[in-house]
Image (tube, rainbow, N blue to C red; front, side, top):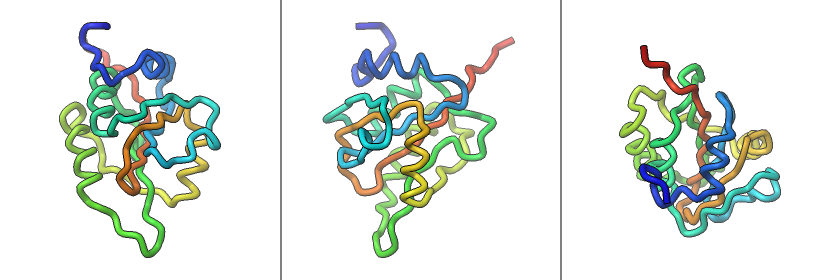
Length: 145
């Protein structure tokens, strides 16, 4: 166990976060997402909810301040409805660490899948809410002078 690292951050996830570079993306995927079919680097976080993982991740990394949309979620398929509480719960964690982050963007389902193929890694979670997947774009650690 390491001091300051939340228990939801496994050694595999810690390694992925460490190896990611500025601008690399990581997908936090719900339990039903096709992560293994879309990306060769998959980290298991079964049983964990995405807000809890966001809390652990944002204690360790920041988001890309140069990106228009460093956070992206999937748009609903026509006819489906979004539960606004899902995005609200994610945004509450974002705002705890990085309140100046632009609003969460939305992306069409198949475009989201294509972007997942190019992501640095996919984290398969235990999240079960519809449209709970989110892409994070890692930033550069701010230089303090």
